[in-house]
Image 1 (spheres, helix red, strand yellow):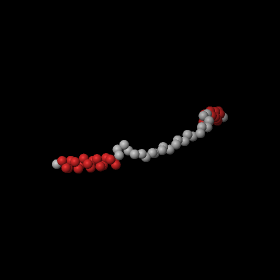
Image 2: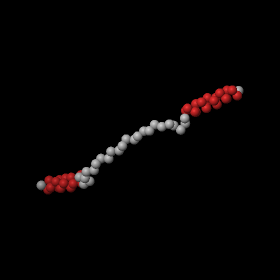
Image 3: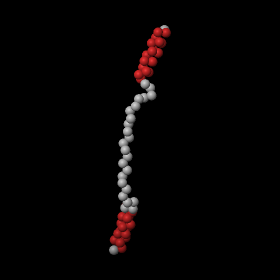
Image 4: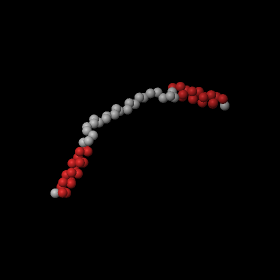
Length: 61
């Protein structure tokens, strides 16, 4: 009987701490938004400038 009382006391003490915090709603984080923008190096002007430098290098020889 003494072992049964000890086990019952231990279970009753540990069961109370399982609900000590109460209910808290889960936190749902928003998904990150990906914004596609232009890069800092604009290929529309970079490619013709490199081509011009190449033509000038060939013409100087």
